[in-house]
Image (cartoon, rainbow over all chains, first blue to last red; front, side, top):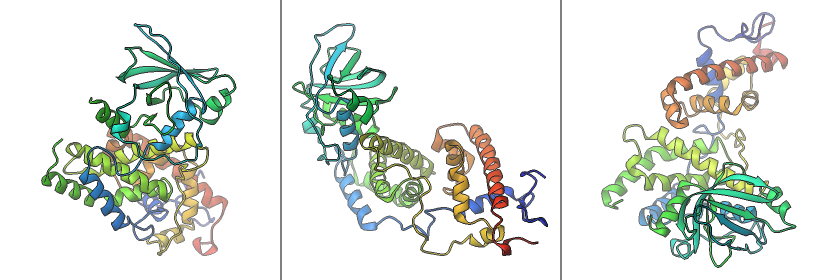
Length: 210
Length: 185
């Protein structure tokens, strides 16, 4: 007898599924194991929901809570934690820029970003990691929101000694998409930089008038 | 996008219809704190893309948004710190009420934890389609909207996932033969 044939407890004490009702029984068993079934898990706190809805309804510029700060910190870590070099390459080659990232405590909370601050960034772009080699992440730029001179590639390079931070603490994944801002040669750890999300893109578009 | 009382009313109506199921969707897939944050994200997306929310059946669309927001949240957190906010796919809150389907489980001798354990042992895509089918109680066409694949593909995947889960449950039941009262001897 195969596992397939057994459907409910039979005379041998083996489990057998009721013929013709396998789906029904399976679904009922899964539902009984639902960790958030109504009546088991608590529902949404109505007052919290009301707060959120009020905030959302009264603003179209910013979400009610900072959502992407962890990603921003991740992007800062991706760039080495203490300092990075950034060089742009493209059809119209430009002189390499040198950016630094202030040292940061990865566990620190960042305040909510806002459009007014983000729009002051000198460099802002949407890019996807196409290569990570020896502490250097290469991003293919799909959109420049500010600066960049039309370059198609940005390389984020950790200085000597921080390759471990770049490749160990936060492993930039091939294919991962980021939105990054930089100013005055620096990518601030609590800036709007972070992994791409619709929310973050909305924020960039609001900041740079797209 | 124009703000108006009508828009606010429509938003309130959508939220009233989906917030509880979306909350439960998130609780089934992550910890409570992350679920609360991601729920906020989902509401923001609903507000911003209100014109895209289907009028008749908004829930699959909202589940799809929640799935994306949750993926973003968990990816970001995982990369920022190696610890927090990892997905606890099947980490249930302690039950506070009797399980309505417990009788069936008692009959089969498989406790809820056994079912969850079997589910955990499946591939992620099998698990996901089964959860949407059983926990969110969606039909293949609705699951297709959540996953962004064809209903036909969902049906095939679901069929295979059910088969694999049944086999696992059978193995579990036979390996740990159950409470004596669960089986005729």
